[in-house]
Length: 375
Image 1 (cartoon, rainbow, N blue to C red):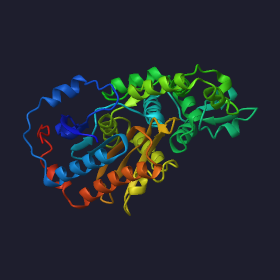
Image 2 (image 1 turned 30 degrees about the horizontal axis):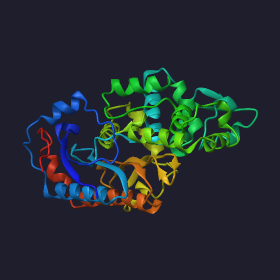
Image 3 (image 1 turned 90 degrees about the vertical axis):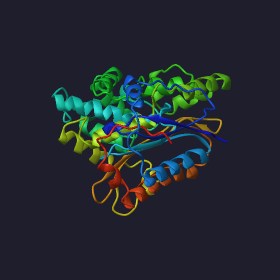
Image 4 (image 1 turned 120 degrees about the horizontal axis):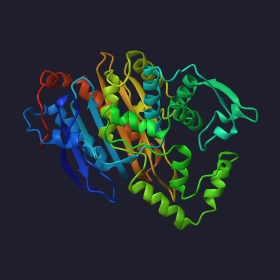
């Protein structure tokens, strides 16, 4: 059984919510930024509403009941109030990290340093591994498209090769890390790119020949189980592409408010993510009629029936335009897929019920106060 420990953390708009930190069954990095430490010292001056406490309790219950290591965060985009379960632990992102690549690329577009219409010719040398449907078009002779199309396919189809092409033309992993630093986005790590990330998780040294004809699977399966397990557990304990649920919803809320990109790029990114094809029964499965979702999924490798990373992050928007950023990240689980998706759907439904109760308006008038939750 998991035992919850209550902790206070900062949120946007100088308002804080309740975060429930369960005891960890495996070590995980939990660094605190200076911004987190400073805001966490604020004296509580605004009490949460009964509805907010009820939503916090629902999120806590979902986290405690789940068969695996799960992190959940919900942030009201307009008021800044947030609640989370295990919100400051770093969880494997897997393809959620494509969101940061898109942000970085669009920031370059806003600066005039990159064009979405820039032609790109992909060859077999550009192929990566796992999910890469564009490989069929690359074939033996290559395939020419543009940055904008590659970014759209990376987000909507979670195509690894498309994402890798955008990543390196936007400046590579260090450009993404620089973007995160410059925008003050904390609680997010960015890995070395798909090839090196996945090969390290598997305990194998990458070779480009692994990108073709299932060769990566063959090489991985030939490794001693002890070697694979050691690499797998190392990744779970401290994922190089890790993200905290609160860090994710912080960035999502800032994107939705137009604080990270130009208006045109903000609209473009959210529009692309609103047509995501992957994960139709994750967060999206919990939507009520009239609600919209812009989201990005992430799914990691499996060893011995245990999966390292099963995620969905996004912004849900009510018919009245009010929005909530949601992140559900699963670090380690062997739970059936239906249970994982149910946890995500229940998070969305609980948030929608909170909104439809009208309780979010009770807090909006007091958003100028600085507070941290204490219960």
